[in-house]
Image 1 (cartoon, helix red, strand yellow):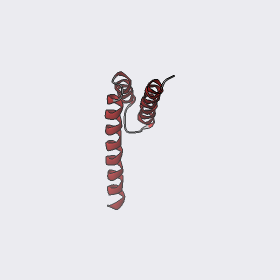
Image 2: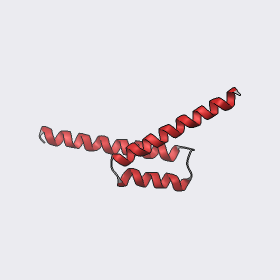
Image 3: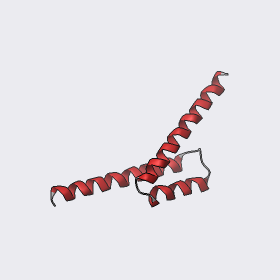
Image 4: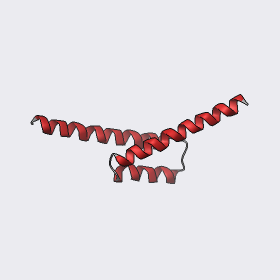
Length: 76
């Protein structure tokens, strides 16, 4: 296998791992209803890379907002 093919396989493996990781995070999240989780998983896998980046961004911002709301509740 030449260097270019090896690099291509490595990139593909990293993309699949990232998409799988984001999918697991979505399904483990308590922020969404089951139907929303299913829709996000479809987005992740039907729009490779872009779908995972979008789902990851939304999930991260929702988790941050949820943490801020929890902090506000605890403070006052």
